Image (cartoon, rainbow, N blue to C red; front, side, top):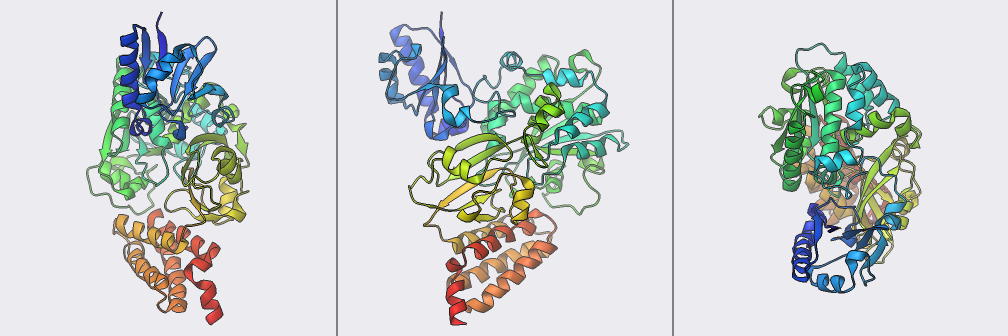
Length: 517
């Protein structure tokens, strides 16, 4: 009887040597005449332990990490195939505190199953949500999603049920489901982990969305920089078609849903929903004026549901266990869980799925273990490159959309990037303006011109050139961008700029200027 060994095929693990480790384990087993079943799973999201090798034993999975190819002979010598002790032993995987204390709903199968095995997906409660949805009327599916309290996980946090209901009630001969998989924010990777580690859950969520609103065609708009996700998504879609979970009659129900993956060309602005639709139609990725909303006139002028990967991947468990089950997690109007992505200067980076309400400090220290350098954490940026910088005095803020909004911050996609006390916040503000200038689609003046002028102003502040006047100009310029831009790229760039200035004025020479004045 062969022993099952798991080695991740997730791109983060591959970048740390997982492919070499897998080959070394297969070769060593063959040399020793040991039969093993090598499964390439997704990553558990404990990046400092990657490549994380797991072995199936009578006591459950036993973990070892971080494993390099050179460690493999010694692991065999230590009888790791039976859970033997070794310097890299981590004990039962599920008992590792970083994992044990999470509430994994959306990522429940990531790291556990073979991502492209439909049988594995079905064995681990896959497609139960779709089977329930097939028994319901469209309005009842939408009601379950509405009752769950699910809000868009892409950043806007708009209630998903309201968006779906708008499309449901929009008369049209054709409707679409579009998945925004253009995950381009720095420090974010939860979309990628789902698409690489459990692509079927996204496919199931989109199929349920199609049944709910009467859409028969879906598109996953994927950034070209995710080749492993592209491969796994297409393999999973092919398997779903073959087994009747996609196509002209889903599981013989007579209800149709087709799905395909389209690659974007790498423009950040195509993460904005209307620019994405333009790109999907084969045009240059320019932001559209709103109204009309995409729910009324979206892809090819038809009613369209556009949701983020995590939003759609959260739907199957809602239809499986009910909206009330999902709503019981979280706090206030932020219901369910959020896959939090911890990156930057942090000792234990990775993915942490928790119910809303956990504090930044708990994430940074209980999970993250503090900074990688051992120095004090001075600031975090939450919500991607357009998110506000938050100082240590705000680390007790619970992860909750409204609590963050009250501090003029955003939770966004749940990405947290950590900086220790050596960071220069004036340079971080300049980076935000430069990022906007580089990525602007150019359609509106506040974003196109404002960001370029913003870089020039920040250069003068950093160079101590007319600092008092330039600081006033920076605030005035930020106000124009905030209130005059067409979309969130120009409209939110002032968040990192002004939060850096407000919380860390000494880095801009503001204190010095005030004394001089």
